[in-house]
Length: 209
Ligand code: ATP
Image 1: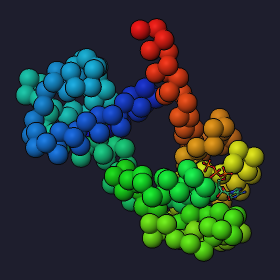
Image 2 (image 1 turned 180 degrees about the vertical axis):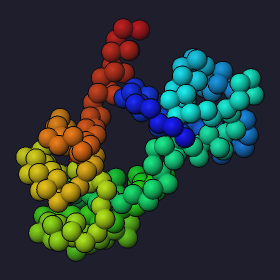
Image 3 (image 1 turned 120 degrees about the vertical axis):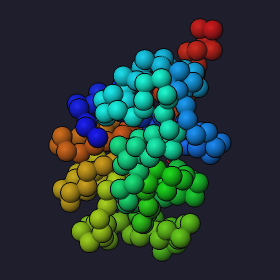
Image 4 (image 1 turned 120 degrees about the horizontal axis):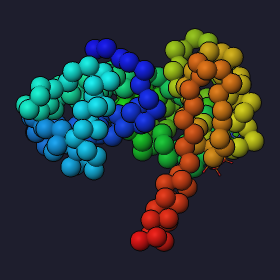
């Protein structure tokens, strides 16, 4: 599979393709045309063909895509099969909810540990994940292969934690602190999650119906 320079817009659509293809696999659908997939996803068939062409040929003209094969290809492009490992920092309401409820494994991630400063949570386990003290973070990261750090700490704490972990070679941050973190090093990738963006988009749509 040849990868060209992939635009951010295409990368952002890939998880949606993957999710829809997972649903189709679960329903036992074997083959789908770009037209039918486009109808499900509310995008045009030509957009789909153009997106997939960035990665080489997935289907045969006029014959559609094999759903399982396409799902595996896109999962591979997304890195779902790469056995990524992550840790969660901050086990307050949000960190707790993510560890208890979010299906990290569906995206190819294993949660190895969580970290916190509070004696109320340090030493406990959540979903079989140990909550370790922050002062053991450096040592832990040096001996475990950690790909991504989930940030669910208060805003004031986040930059210092990111700087410490970046120095230790961490390259991925999933940031829920509602601060727009920017990577100082181009190798470091940050996803800033703002729940309110989605709600405000909905707000706009209902206000401008
Ligand atoms: P949220 O709903 O955002 O999780 P919360 O009210 O449960 O909020 P916060 O005050 O946001 O709690 O703190 C989240 C967690 O981060 C808490 O468990 C807190 O002990 C922990 N925490 C605070 N400062 C640090 C830090 N510097 N390093 C690691 N964990 C921290």
